[in-house]
Image (spheres, rainbow, N blue to C red):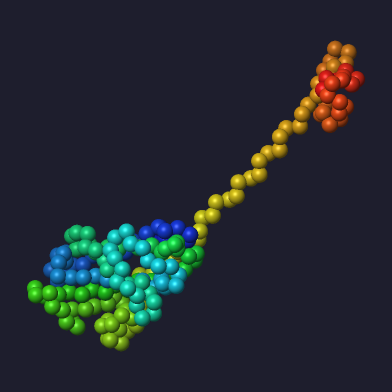
Length: 185
C-alpha cells in the first residue's frame, strides 16, 4: 500500500505478504521473507517502522527483511529519509526462503516473485522484475497565507444643519487640533 508514500513526507510504504504451505495453512516458521524495493538509495535512505534493512541490491535498490506478524503474514513498513521524492515510480520483488528442521536451506527453497537482482535469485537468469508497483503521490504543498488586510481608513465625522456625514480623513484637514467646516478630526 503506497497511500502514505506522499512526496516530501516520511509516510510508510506497507508491504504485506501472506505465505501458506501446500495444505493452505499459514507458514509461521522455518521461513524468511525479503523484499527488493527499486527505490534507489540515491533517492533517499530507508527508515523502518517494521521489518529491517538487508542492505542494497547490486543496482542500489533497498533490500528489506519482512517481519512475521502472525498467521502467516510477513510485513514491512518502510519510508524514505529524509522524505519521499515527488512522482517516483518503483516496484518490489518478494523473495521467499524456507529452511528445513535443522535450519538448512538449498537452492530449491529460495524463490523470487517475479525476479530479483540479488544472488542466488538472479542466478536463475531473471533480473529484477517487480511483483508489485508503487508511485509516490504529488506533494501536498499548502497555499501561502494571504497577506494581512490593510488597516481601515480613519473616518472623520462632519455635521452641518442637523445632519451628519462621514468623510474620509484624507479629505479632511491634516490639523488634529482644529475643526474644519463642521468636521471633527
